Amino acid sequence: MKIRTAVFPVAGLGTRFLPATKAIPKEMLTVGDRPLIQHAVEEAKVAGIERFIFVTSQGKTAIEDHFDVNPVLESTLVERGKTKELDRVKSLQLGPGEAIFIRQQQPLGLGHAVWCARSLVGNEPFALLLADDMIIGDAPCTAQMIDAYNKQGRGNYTAVMDVPQEHVSRYGILDITQDDGTLVQAQDVVEKPDPATSPSRTAIVGRYILDPLTFDKINIHNFGVGKEIQLTDAFKPMIDAGVPFYGVRFKGHRFDCGTKEGWLEANVANAYNDEAMQPRLLETLKKLNIASQ
Ligand code: UTP
Image (cartoon, rainbow, N blue to C red; front, side):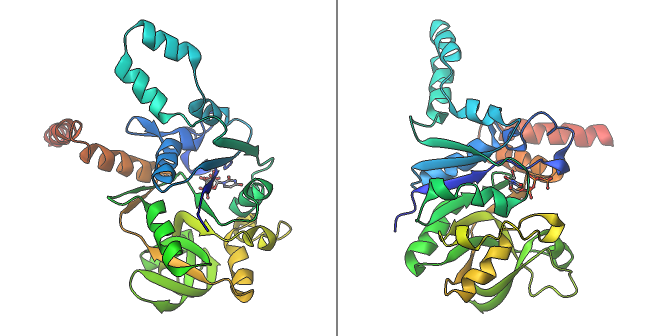
């Protein structure tokens, strides 16, 4: 079945990036000249996604405005002959009816945010992208995930990477049964395990292809780790119901832009990869290095 729908949960509080995220949604923080959510939407578009479902909350209307038409801005750019800027702004908009917004009324966790999209997604597999996990690489991560799904068939898929043992307690960690180096299969997923008892170092990052059974298996009465309704808690019941769970070791670098350090690294990497920006970046680093001596 073609993956045509993507869900973007953007209703989190972003407490790790306060005070920046007090009035600005975390997903509107910029890497280069675009907000994080724009990077994620572009990645999904390239992978063939046609329906973009955003799970939002109070204070996140900037995200809706970002993807909407802005007639005053557009007419002003036309009047001032700023055609390059106009083309850029227009190229980032979503088409009529392509964007759907639904609210998560309380920040009860990622599992709950995904569950809020159930009636919009319907009975088909879908992509899930967490915009604060930015992945930079030659092949867009969501396209790599869809490729794996197309080859392997029905199942739940998540992007994975191996992390240092002392970091496993920050992630959902796979209990692996098979591993061919690129695709791994798991019999369970444990959310934020103790490093001493973690089943592996293979960690989930924010890209998924999910089976629609997920909506039935998210238990909205079960508050897990961190007193949140965890998406990972839905995977074991699905494995037991015969839906296999796969991890895809993607090609690319992942930056946790939900933290100040990860966001800074993503901006540096983005500037370094940009032909126009790279000389200025290197010059600045050199200057600062000289200044600090
Ligand atoms: P995070 O785990 O980064 O949580 O969410 P958070 O609340 O946004 O940030 P911190 O941990 O307090 O700093 C991962 C993704 O899930 C969404 C977030 O918006 C982010 O895209 N999310 C999280 C929701 O949509 N709703 C929730 O209740 C929790």
